[in-house]
Every structure is written in structure tokens, then in C-alpha cells.
Image 1: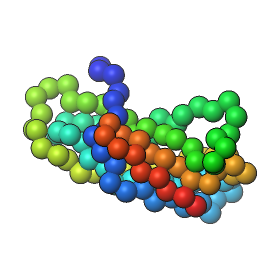
Image 2: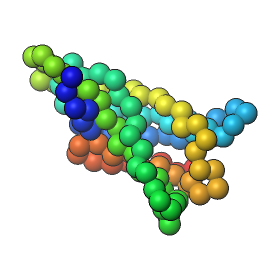
Image 3: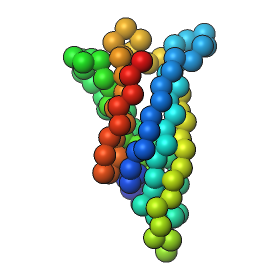
Length: 107
């Protein structure tokens, strides 16, 4: 199995606080792979010793690259993820990074 890598690009990011028993952040992302055959996108959250001063937490959208020959066309996709027990008292937004760009969403 190959090492997970950042996806090609992020087009948009929307965040909202989910109405559940414990605090959770709903993250919806429109992004693109650089070719066909990529799979398993997931956010890789940066680990902080102390909360970021600006309240903007960072994560990279990583996925498994193709293991065989793949089409060489840009492949758009949507990814949704829930961040359970996010730092409610510090988080003001999130910056999602890819291989070529990053997009910030704020509450």
C-alpha cells in the first residue's frame, strides 16, 4: 500500500456546528484529484501543543493515490467529515490544505 498524499486542489470548504449531544463540527469540502484511481479521502488534522492564536485550525485533505495505471484527467469529488469534540472554546475556523492550495472557512 502506498503512502497517503494530499489531494490536488481544494475548491471550497463549508463548516457548521452540528446539533448533537457532544460538540461536533460538520466539514463539507469540494476538491479535485489530479487523476483517476484515488480513494479514501480523509482530513489529517495538525496537532497543536497550544491553540492557534488566530483560532484557525489546519488540516490537510489526504487520500490514497492510484496503485495501477489511472486516467490523467482532473477528477472532482465531494468529501464530508464530522470533527467530534472539536475545541469549541478556541476554534474560529479551519484551513484545509491540498497539494496546490488551501481554503479557509470561518464560523
